[in-house]
Image (cartoon, rainbow, N blue to C red; front, side):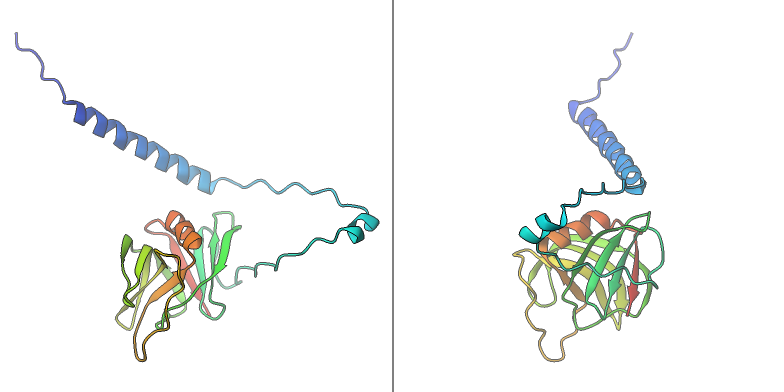
Length: 188
């Protein structure tokens, strides 16, 4: 009677790894679409205590533009040079300013079509977390951040760049949020 062939150990490890990645992906999608708890109301100090120790107030993040749709999406305002990451419940998860390239996408709805972990930008800067979503005037438009965290240099006269540069931490946040097929709403 022949002995059944055994699977090599690499096949088992590969199978278990693929299964684990699939399970984590499913859980991440479910967690992202779950309702978020409302923040607890903080106890307010009495008026004399508030005057004794004033607290600096951070500037308020601008609200997501009204004409930016609903549901889970990335909103990019060309005029405000700002991005919002909005979850399925229409809550802003993160908002930040950006450095746009010289070519801006027209207002409208786009989807994330591709992602590249790292490359050299059209301005010669090493960039990472590149998330592509539009083509405008033959130029690919997408979000990215410089590997060294720097702001982009001024574009050379007549240069056409479609990279919308982000701060390093914001680039990592967009990379995690912007899976292929994620909607991007561009507004003025």
